[in-house]
Image 1 (cartoon, rainbow, N blue to C red):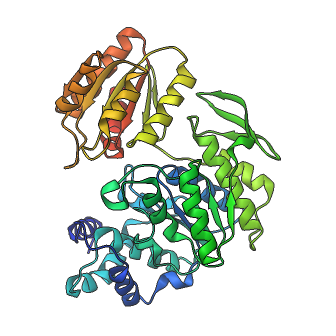
Image 2 (image 1 turned 135 degrees about the vertical axis):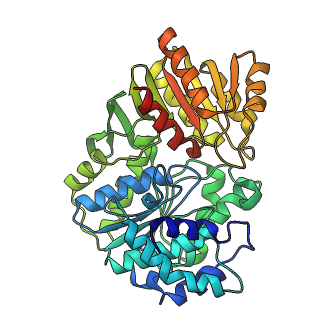
Image 3 (image 1 turned 90 degrees about the horizontal axis):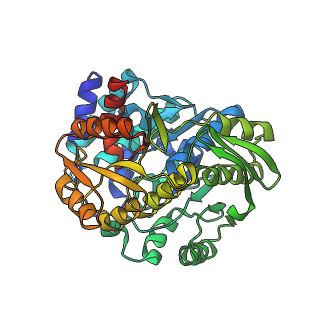
Amino acid sequence: MNYNEALTFIHSVNNYFCKPGLDRIKALCEFLGNPQDELKFIHVAGTNGKGSFCSMLTSILKSAGYKVGTYTSPYILNFNERIAINGEPIPDDELASLCDKIKPFCDSAADKPTEFEVITAIGFEYFKRQNCDVVVLECGLGGRFDATNIIKTPVLSVITGVDFDHQNFLGNTIEEIANEKAGIIKKGVPCLWCGDNAVAYKTISKTAKEVGAPLFVCNHHDITFNNMDLDGTDFNFGNYKNVLCPLLSTYQPLNAANAIRASEILNDNGFKIQKPCIYDGIKNARWPARFEILSHSPTVIFDGAHNPQGVTAAVESIKTYFKDTQVNILTGVMSDKDYNYIASEIGSVAKKVFCVKPDNPRALAAEKYADIFSDMGITALPFEQINDGIDAALKDSKENNLPLIILGSLYMYGDVYKRIKEKQ
């Protein structure tokens, strides 16, 4: 099959909720000869921060001379981004070839694998064929029953933090959600906890003790800021002075500190990552759609904040960079998120809100979203078409000399990015 046929095949397999478990991915990987058993993994779970952390750690390992596979989701502009080596997405022909190999199993399986399981298995096989030294592997959802958790013994498990999200799958309490994410902790494998929720930490430390996994903590109180503006952040973390992080927002230095701490643990477990490689890796890390500047006239920033914790962090960043200046907001959310809380957070910094509906069946109607802001006394305009919302928001921001911050689902990013570039 060609590349377009490969994408059609991937998106045509089972994309509905299935009984939780690893039986389908195990059968699929056995069909491929269990490629995951021939790889080293750094396994990453968490409610927020996974993608940025994976990007920074990949950049650090690459700087240290390792051939690094990275598996993340969702993609931002191109599907191939999900499976990359040293930052380079899987080539179209390689993806098509791997789909050819895997399709017979998918066609004949009684319990057909899900789309995410298929993509995960493709990633394992590609990384094995390319002889990656290590793979930075991001969980898709939760951890315990996530397809990535088929791996047996990673070199490091990382939980970036725990907060409310996907309650219909992971549970309605922090303890329940933390327990699902703690499912990636393996016997004898060091685990790094990067969060700040005491309830989640209690659950994770209990699991680590039960399975016999050394537990490490990244202390964010060791971070001090030297300078923070729209050109990036200069910060100190322990013995690391004047670390330069180009990724914007108040939360990215925390992700950078997590990557530094992970590098130290890896060095204690057979890796060789020199200090200059850590500095260079963070400085050269790139991760789109996280408080990313898309335009300077007017200032337009996109942040893929899509759950309460993410939106709270984005609003904190808005207040940090723009002080007491109110900003225009363009936003769209999924209907299964706590959109009332999200709206209340956004309302604390918004001059005017432009509501759109992301291109996803789960998206909240723009008019319903706008009504929530209107009830708060904030001017809010709904738009059926994303481009119409972008055009109106850009026009208003230019006329009133206001920054435009675009918050919400990553499913919006491709449409937003394309339209912003067309208008420049």
